[in-house]
Image (tube, rainbow, N blue to C red; front, side, top):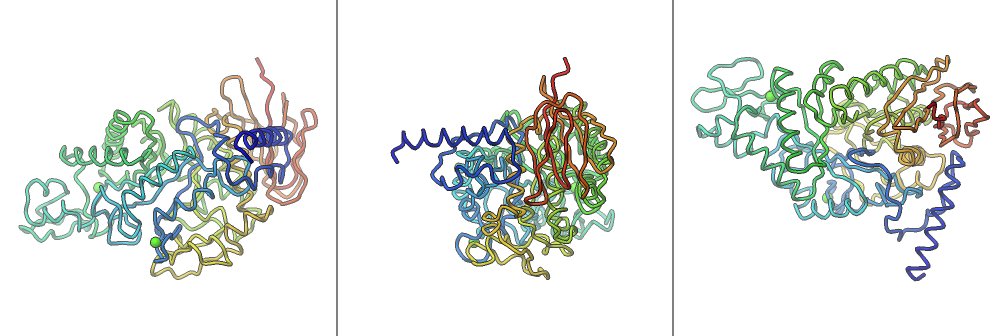
Length: 532
Ligand SMILES: [Ca+2]
Ligand SMILES: [Ca+2]
């Protein structure tokens, strides 16, 4: 086909898709472009600013381009069509908007949270040029790449620490050095009888983030990665920067301001694995996002809502959380997730029950803010216990080893999933296809990212429901967490905008005037008539 005819053809495909999508079918309506591999990113998502669905990649375990067993940056670039092929109607692509790469810098460990050089790429992962290629390819697809930045500590092999050990006063000041063992987190420096702080591990000396020279280094690192195409950062262990939470908030404020002065659209999300009250207080820094740990993990609110079929607690907590963080920073974006590289994989604690896995996904992929998917979650991969097990090889296929990594040395669980990404993409009943549909539903309704949530009472404990409003547009989001059909009266219900069903081939939700019929384990997005 010549280009003009092809473009016309694609235009009609999109038109047909748009119409069929607004009419809503829970599966299979959006296959028009499935085989159009040559599509050139014709369907940019309407999601703006720093809103987006993010995908966390544990780099060494994701995709191996050269067969040495270790995941690498070229391997990620090779898998970009799976992550975002630029075509929101495709059933082959997750169409995420952002990627978080766990640390890519030179390091002695497989996890690389002990950095030897902040301005280089670990040889096993590739080169700076590979990173630039990755970010350039991502940019074409509208995908932002944020990199893990570990500022609490370096590796003991970092040249700064080596200099400190040799007695350089300048570099002694880079770390938290004491004349005595101030706590059991202090270790002998091997110079002048001094001790250094190693909050996590004696191999990871804590940086002195009060030191202006260290801050200049950080500025230089930030600019270095902006130049290479990074859209922002995921900040590691921010609650460990100082023993004082107010000082951590002040540091985050300084860091955020500096990044914005260099790149006004920077996106930053921070890990502060602390209680909700402390995480909340860090929003005083006006950092865009903090990970919402309360929602994650086996006993967190999202998995518990799916497991216990109780929609009340999660709804109240989510609404209050969003209102409170936006009081502190009107541009705050909640960062919700159900698992990450430090937590047991969700498929494991759901006993690989696809209905529970899909129900949890439906919940968090329709909540306000930026959802973060942990790689492999979308294929129902399990992995729990020691950290290595949580970071296992991404299973691209169960029929081919191509691109599959060896995984961390020391992992004691074999990877477990009944089908890899390739097999699941072909199976409309799969977990992967459910994630694809849920992301499509979200991206087709940008207010789900940016809207302000409000209460929507149904009187049904097994229904999680809320509204999101942006300007004159209000959508109602309803999830039936139970195996019994629910009939819900929604005042002002105007139009069914989309549905999901965690039970494949079951009936889709139906809106009959103001009555919504929610079949078991289903989700509906309903537009509410403007009340003004
Ligand atoms: Ca490799
Ligand atoms: Ca520290």
